[in-house]
Every structure is written in C-alpha cells, then in structure tokens.
Length: 372
Image 1: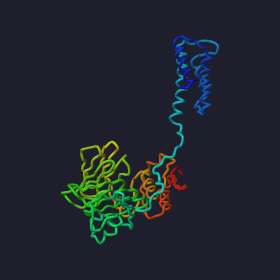
Image 2 (image 1 turned 30 degrees about the horizontal axis):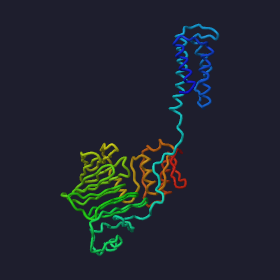
Image 3 (image 1 turned 60 degrees about the vertical axis):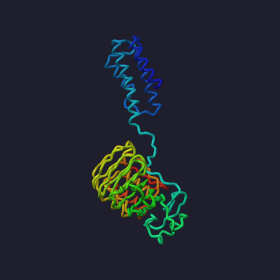
Image 4 (image 1 turned 90 degrees about the horizontal axis):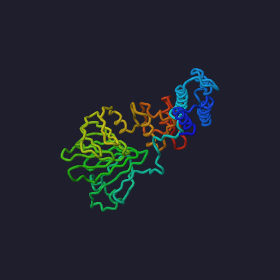
C-alpha cells in the first residue's frame, strides 16, 4: 500500500472514531493521492479538484464550516478514497504490460546438418532422403557398409538398440525390422531395436512421425513418448510429441489405443479421430480432417483452420529460425496455410503475408510476427 493510500485509510478510520477534520484537510489528502498518481505517470480520467468541488457542492460541504453530519463526511471521504484506489486498480489492469517478446519457437544453435544413427557410443551419418537403416532386416550384402561403420563384423549382427536423429530442415523415411514404415519429421528422434523380440514391438519417439505399422496381431506395436503411448496392431497414424506438455495422436485407419504416461486406462480411437494427451494425462478426443497428414507425409507444410502459433512453430522448426510474436493476440488466429517444404524461407514468409492481416518479417535469424 502506498503512503497516500495509507493516509486515506487512516483518515476514514479517524472519521469513523469521531475525529472531525476540516474540509481543507479532506481535500488535501485526496489531492496528495492525485499528485502521486500524476508523478507515476497515471493519466487521471477526471479532474480531481473539479470533482472534489462538485462533490462538496452536492453534499453541502462549505469551506471553513460544517453543514453536514459526520456520517456524510465519512461517506464523502470514503467515496473519494475508493475512487482513487479504483483509478490505481484500473491502471494496473488495463495498462499494457512491459513488452516482452513471445517466442513460439527458439532456433537450435549450431544445429547438425546430418541425419545420425547411433548404437551405444557408436555413431554414423546416414545419407540419402530415404534409406532402410534397420540393418538386421536387410540382406548382409546391403547392410555390410552400415554394420562396419558401426564397428561390427558383417556376419555377426547383434540385437541392438538404435537411435536415429533427424535435424531441423529435414525429413527422413526408414523401415523397421518388421516392415513398419516410418516417415520422420524435422527435429525428431526415434529409438528402436534392430529386431523385435518379445510380446510387443516397442519404439520411442520424440518429435513427430507418421507410422504405417506392419500387421501382427500377436505382437502389438507400442509407440512411447514423454507424454504417453499408443498401442496398435496394424494401422496408419501420426504421432506428435515434441515436449512433455502435450502429445497428439491422429488415426488415419485401423485402430489404436491411447493412454497417458501415468494412467493405466486406454482410450480407443476410430479412424478420423485425434487424441490430445495433456500434461495432466487428460485425453481429449475429437474428429479431425486427416488429409493434412497425407500432405505432411508428401513434403508440405500444411494446416487447415490451425492457430497461427502452430503454423509459425512449424516454420521455425523446419527452417531453424526463432519465431517471435510482438502481438500475442495474433497467435490464436485460425488460418489455412500450404507451402512445400522445399520452398525457401522467403517464400514461406511471403505466403504468411499474403493473408494481409498481420506482418511477418525476417530480422537476422528471427521471424517476427506482429500487427501490420
């Protein structure tokens, strides 16, 4: 509480206890509060002196005299005090907060350019746009180079756990040992075995990937993420989980059961449904258009009725640029956006500006989105 606010409160308490200040003192306390507001740069919505005079006139308060009972004086001072406090409160609520950039995406500094495959402490670069790198599933003559690069004799294929890392700005297609195809997107990581052993086929995903799971009713295919898991027998689905705050699973065909990381119960999806697992393990299921996932798989940045923040984040991740909103309200604008991923960043930005409802500019390594 400020000194002036404290003075007002004490004065009201004194009046209530029977103290009888003169009108000049009442006016002075209120004026002091008004002066403090002005010094702090608070724009007064009223002329305090003028309003005080008007209030005194309406209540019959005369300078140098006393024409109303003390209860009315208490009312007058309390009302003015409340008015002053209200001005402070309104100023706090409606004045714009100090401007801070709102980053939808933060670029990866020194981002690697190569797709990397690792097994334990061994690591190799993976070349090409699409390659079967589940080395245990292909003939020895084809896996020889990969196995030797990993430090193994080609006739001694281990059951090992591999991790493939996809850098920003790239996508990659792999085929697992059971024939499952995986289309991986920028900034994603998949951990999987060189061959599946046991009752389940388990993989771990960080990021986003489209799965076309090979059918095997006796061995469910389980995709684990930081937020939950999807259990399928044979289906096509898209899984996106770049961080633990939320995870989205969209079922294109077949069937899938979804559960949160800390939950024991599954929710079954039917084709055309998407499930979002929140940070509290709540699962929200809704119908959605699956056409977009086909576009993504075929090399497009595609969004339909999506928040601008989602679109900007995807652009930032693909082109590895910071994305900053100078006006947070723009993040929730719903748009239909379509751009080939092999287009330049400049082209992606031009398509954003084509909406003519905001401004998108590239400043250094930051894409800034704000009012026009």
